[in-house]
Length: 322
Image 1: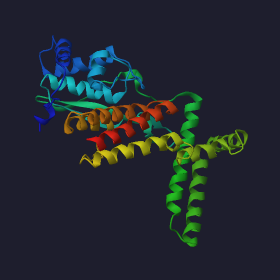
Image 2: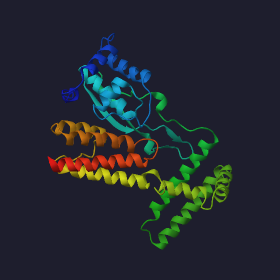
Image 3: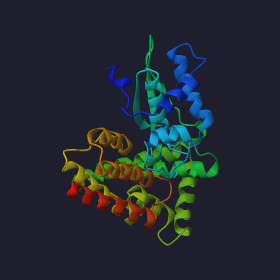
Image 4: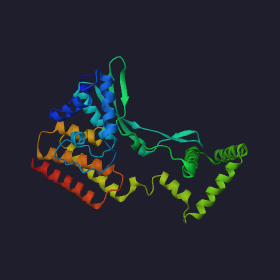
């Protein structure tokens, strides 16, 4: 297990090892080395998206050596690579960094933007220890003030609405009537407990009628259900079609993308599994570019889409010729 977590790409640049040694020169233990590497990323890098990686070299190595703005996947991959270059077992971890507490409902809100990546290093006598090399300023925090409080109310109302939808599903009229009475009684007790809540609900209902024909709350609930959101934009549909095409091409060569791998991780797998060829270069370029375009902050523009579609078409031709 630990040997697998020390594995390195066969063509790793010697510059990466020199950089790792330089950063940890004064360290005496693996724990000190891991802490020094984490501080190296915090102090010497910035968070960002959309950097035009060259495609001619490994993007993680390019990130380490040129220090362009990048997102958490690069920080986690870069630190894992540097740890392994020093012989320290490490693994790339993905999940959610949840910081948004809803004081109205008493729960944490998890959003797509909270998706995050970090590193675990194996430290003697301690086991696996988590390190987050992404600069702290890049991590989203709690929204404060009046707008933040209003957002909490809207989130809570949406949550109650979704709960109600789930509860009424499949119920007969008699059960629905009983459920409606129970909910009205619960609402009454909730309002009596803190009467000012009625004022908040009244203000939100007034705002719904004032802010546009369909109302702010209606728009909010529709966004919650996925309508008119980034994921359903026409350009995202084109991106997905493009990725499906490349996935199909790779599957025809026996390369099936595992569901647990990110696209950047899959790009590294493809690099190792395919023999050196134009097709391998094109596949890696596509996967790296797709990751940047799909998960960047702004919606993709026509130039981005055309570039990816062109890469997919060229890859298809390359596979046919090989």
